[in-house]
Image 1 (cartoon, rainbow, N blue to C red):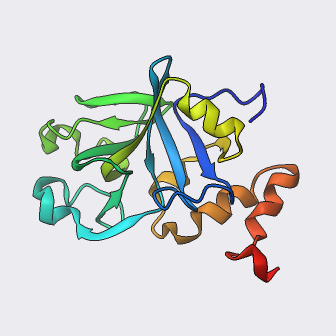
Image 2 (image 1 turned 180 degrees about the horizontal axis):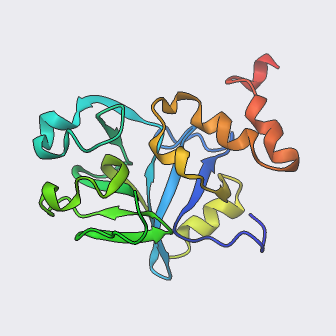
Length: 188
């Protein structure tokens, strides 16, 4: 991260090869909230086999493909967070809190009929990733995360398998080279 890339909601954290924690190895995290108290985000590339309709029946028809829960992170895995993309920035539904532009958090206690039709994409995450005050900054300084801008397709892509590589590939300069590293650098 450079001084020109501030840490803020709507940015992505991309795990570096040095990050070996199994909760975050090869992940892409969307930051939902960043302030002096810490940071909160969700892992974008860890789909589960659990259909949203099995656990949150009313929301099963509203979520983007694949219609499964995503493992948002190791904190509060029994809870769920939803991220949505407004179809029209002037039509903000009840229960939507903006993160960056048309991207925001959707309150799952909101009746579905008040939200349905106003979003062009929505994803539900079981759990989240959280950092205390200055903890994330320390992890970035030690080389655990790259901080890069998000693009709307990052959050709602049908197949997030190659998200880590695709996000790095589009970065300028040497950062793009990391997208071609082998899974096991010893094989290089």
